Length: 429
Image (cartoon, rainbow, N blue to C red; front, side):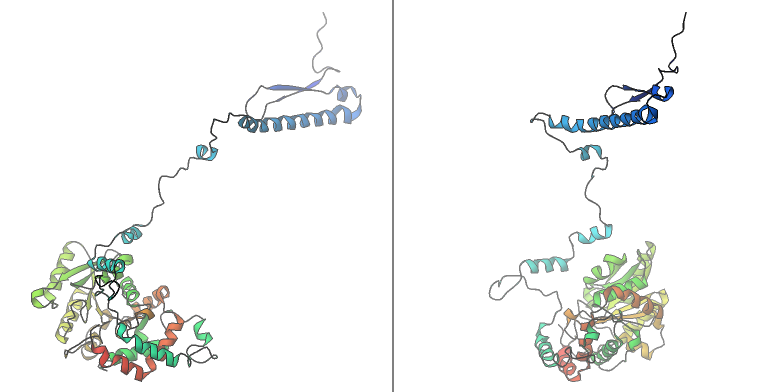
């Protein structure tokens, strides 16, 4: 009995290919391509081999395209009443769980302030007093801004701006002085002018070294920059209270440094008492808080007291004994009234042998020169490491070049300074 010819026998050899639609569904399909022409030699290589293979791949490509277009066709045939749903939201596992978080620092600052100072400031903005249109409005008595001197500033600017105009490469307001980089910690010319102004305000009782001055865009960044230099997050400064409420903003918001009040008694006219500082220091130590400095306003803000020499000596002794820094805020040095003498800590250091490296002065032109919009603050320090660090931090709060050049000319005008900061500056404002 003859055996049936095998698939490999001449004339019956086949190449069997199996394909499946690319969509993953459907029935498997067998595709038979005859190759007997290759074995038997009929039709040559082209007709017997290449042509069938080409037909095979063309057919496979056609089937793929057909299956790829079929889902779209089925979707278009859906009834009109069935809503279409975007597929990305169904397929994506990255669903939103809420708003992107912000830093804890930003969250604490963004929240409403419970300080009476800022509560009152907000009410004043919402309902400002006006003698004619709103006589029952809120009057701002918490902001030290002297607008009575604006006419003096206006007259000086009107008389001098033409001479300082853009008229070449010389002059303070030349184009090269306005449009180019300047030292971020302040022009040396302005430092010299500010040092002279500070000496004038303090009645020539002390001279200031311009090389120990760092200029910033206002007293607020001055005290913040100094805080960055003296303490780490979690450390604290002692501050006699009541104190300027802006210290909470200037020191606590970004540095992470805390303020520990040392309450002064109203029965003693809120006079600073070293025993009060001692108690506050010991309580902080028991709580594990590192006290890095004592911060004192002289004249006091808000009560206006002046520190005499003996109290300044006591403060220096206290800071030395605790091995901490001493910061004196003297922004109101020329804004006093009465016959009581103002004594700068710099004057005490010139006459007594104390460790100067722990003493730092904060000053500015907003009060005594009545130019808060110019934004000029001063760090005056006897500590070389603090000066080096503060000069680099000043990059983030530098004074604009036009303001600096303008002030160099203004502070050099002795007649203007005498007129605006003579007897006029001796009034509290």
